[in-house]
Amino acid sequence: MAITRRTFLEAVPLGTLSAAYAALGAAVDGKSGMPTRILGKTGARVSVLGFGCGSRLLSYNDEGKAVEALHKGMDLGITYIDTAFGYGGGKSETWVGKAIQGRRKDLWLVTKMQDRKGDDAMRTMEGSLKRLGVDQVDLVHMHALLGPDDLAKAEAPDGLIKALYKMRDQKMARFIGVTSHFDPMTLKTALERHDFDCTQMALNAALSGMTNGKGKMIMNRTLPNSFEHQALPVALKKKMGVTAMKLYAQEGLVGAAPLDKLMGYALSLPVAAGVVGMPQLDYIDENIKMAKAFKPLSKGEMKDLSVNLSREHKARLDRFFADHVDA
Image 1 (tube, rainbow, N blue to C red):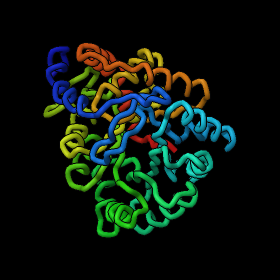
Image 2: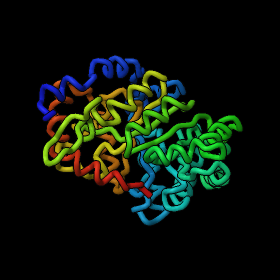
Image 3: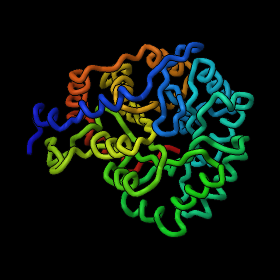
Image 4: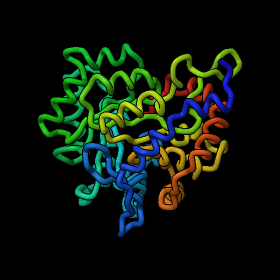
């Protein structure tokens, strides 16, 4: 079926998402002016802007500069800090550990496990806690879930998912979750099957519902093939804490629409936070300014942005994210 504006708009369940968005308990921190929301059933209140500590943090190329950047973000109201062992083989975690000294109680600290074998993940987690200088993180994610085969490895008797439950039971992490930027259907399956507290997924207007077919944009034969339409409703039904990533599609949408509209689209969905990498100090200022000025986009604005960006960019971004893992 050829895509039309009408068929696309009819496929977007914005009414349902708007109701869930209204239940996030949005408030503004009186000290920093940063908007905050509740992270699902964790009950934690976090900043709507999260500091992504992957390749963008590593691009500072110096521990002191990276710590300065993190301090700047925290001083201006960011409380959600997202790192992983896979970011530089522990370098990001080490830098984050230095930056959060003396500030831990005010932060929501996240790391992620790229291992799919349980024993490997437990060893990695022990090292992560040492590098971060903490006894416990707030959240540990299965990092970058790919397709069904990847999920099967994690679900094996000796796989990562059982190790995540063990990390939670042993208080190494308060909560557990899973991230994906590639396969909405596999993430949907994982969320349905397992007892995750949180999830993080790629959510931006260009990924919201079309697939490429022989030179034209077509609707998926069943439901639009996007995280927004497949995985997000499952997470909301199970009251998981949801965070968005790839707001700018790893810079792939920079210039395609105003940055405040790109951030605004993600934050107008029922998510607690949008996690953004900020490789320069002025980027931190710019993103925080946009987060503090955020006003929910109207349904019409979201629909128009989705149609226009998906038509022009989704096929390219699908190819990019098919083999992309931020490291």
